[in-house]
Length: 252
View 1 (cartoon, rainbow, N blue to C red):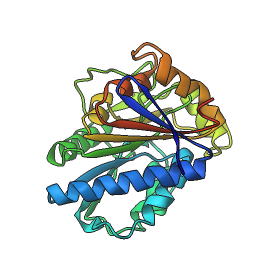
View 2 (tube, rainbow, N blue to C red; view 1 turned 180 degrees about the vertical axis):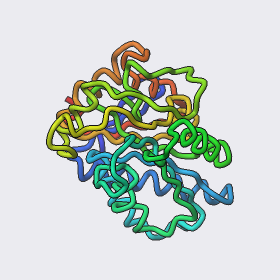
View 3 (cartoon, rainbow, N blue to C red; view 1 turned 90 degrees about the horizontal axis):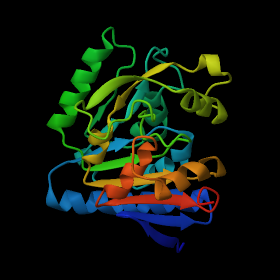
């Protein structure tokens, strides 16, 4: 499983023949990093993304049983506002099924998209991130190059907030239909709670898994467009320890 390796700014890029090999390789590298960090510190704090593009990675990571998961605190990076608490499209539910219920994490912290006061929910989650400084972010990139739910029109590379409520752009909402998460655009929530760009970039290490031909344009922008909020994922090229895992389809 030897990838094609290249570099874009400070961002390492590894291209695998298919999404299964991508997911396994990314999980192996993430697991190795967790183990190394646990040799240096008592706990490791990790933020996860919930999306179909992350399936292979999450399932491979869930099979890594040699890690002392009871010293790992888990977070997720975004959540819809207003979905029923049991909705399978909820990102907390997605991760609960694929990862959080499969491993004995020390703590799992969920974003409450149904909180009566969404701003208060943001403040609460921001306080948790301050209490547990992030070590690793595992993420994807949206078709519109968003990271978490930082769509181009709300992305701020110098955002003063750690967590915020955002409205979702049309491309972002349509992607949820394209991915099969919703059957029609009108079913997709219009707002979400998201970690901001600085919160994600604060991680010591970032692993970004982006398989599939539908992400080819986003990967191209990530690697070659000017670094700006117009293409939020371009900020990854400035991180000292970020790796983008692509397959031959997303690499174009």
